[in-house]
Image (cartoon, rainbow, N blue to C red; front, side):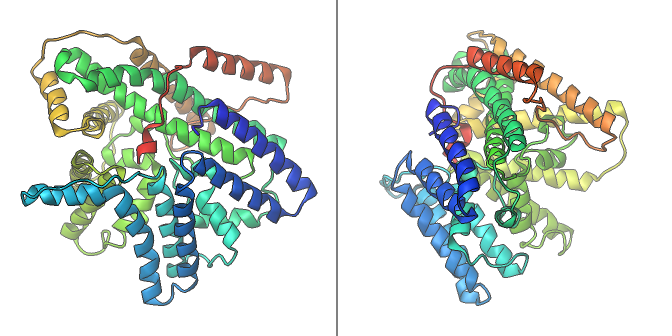
Length: 463
């Protein structure tokens, strides 16, 4: 079930109420078992067969981590989730690519891609690796580990939650459903819901039309669609992350922020510190650093950085367009390191941020296009000032305007607090007062009234 659905709202209200009652009447372990079962129900809502795969990955991680001091067992703990991910997500891709390379025929297997497999396999991997490295103690309680890997807010589209960040929370007595947590969590969830069903979903209609037949539209409409997709994917994925963070907060658990106004980044390195933070951090700690990071010379550092982004692109999907998208980001990150850092004036910082946004937006063309042919059609149409259908779309400008207002508000907030860095913001209405509650319900009314009513899944469900 999607977060942006009546089914989920009903499910979550029941889970929240039962959790609150269990905290007051039963031992803490009861709540964890209940939330574990609720998470499996949530996951099985798409296809109950996926639950067995989730349980298999969890069980393998549980036992291999306990004996990860033995090299063979540790390797098994790494290979198992990678093999599961590789088969379900990449088997047809690699075999068909090899068949094309050698001129052979290949009939693709009918493999159903389990929703969220990229996220929970990465969480299982990080747990086994951290235990092996001695960064955290092995979790001997299977229920707690299973709860961590399957916790429904982050299960199907992230953020990627580290075991070292989440498992310790299960031993803290104050992790409960409370008025304060629900007040904060429900506002964060509503904030994300607005991003998804009001902004991202309206934008998706225009983007799907243009990217479906790019040769039919003029260059200005193509350029507007590129801007629209930059807005869509940000509002869609950051909206999901906000909703996940809000759900977890209501239940008493904390997830780290996954986005931090990425489109004000001054360079591509800064962009990846702000965009999908849980993934970029994961890639740095579990791929870039193990490859050698910057410890083995300049040439090796650039190679490690490029390979990390190349594999990061492939993580997003079994298509060469994602590999090219990741590779181009990797090349620009290398160039960014080569140029180095120096203090910039205000005008230069604005120009740098604008250039970064333009680069990132044009790279989204490869990310969004199903084939290189369509990506090339979009790029060629813009560069050659192609003639065709002109289709202005007001929601693009509405989205840009809202993002600008949010950015300005976050900047003002950062200056008032004396912070060195703009960290974005979440709503902070006091729902225990009549004015706060009134404003909240007005906001909910606007969300419902402006919502796109068509069926439109979250972008990152496909990953």
